[in-house]
Length: 97
Image (cartoon, rainbow, N blue to C red; front, side):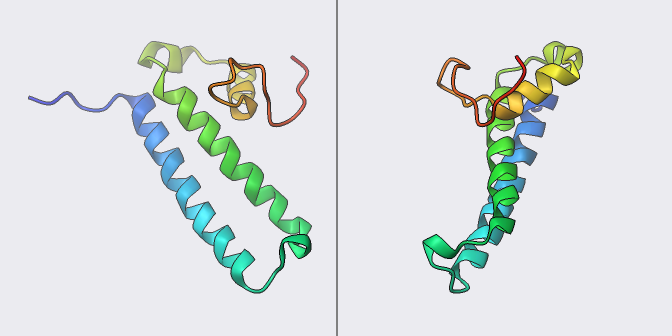
């Protein structure tokens, strides 16, 4: 019998789903006729939200249920900006760490 997905993998799946929806929405906005140098600044938060979801999804895939429950707010915030596969040395934004 197949084991049910862990809570952390369920969260990762939801984050990836949301990122996919946001990518499609952003893609449609860009295709409305904006040239690359004319993309409105109002779309910047969309890019940030997508990246946060992708980073979190990656990190959540490697968390056990116990680790997920023990995450502090600071650790969660850091995960949103740590780029996977760069040994947590590359971040999306400057942090106070």
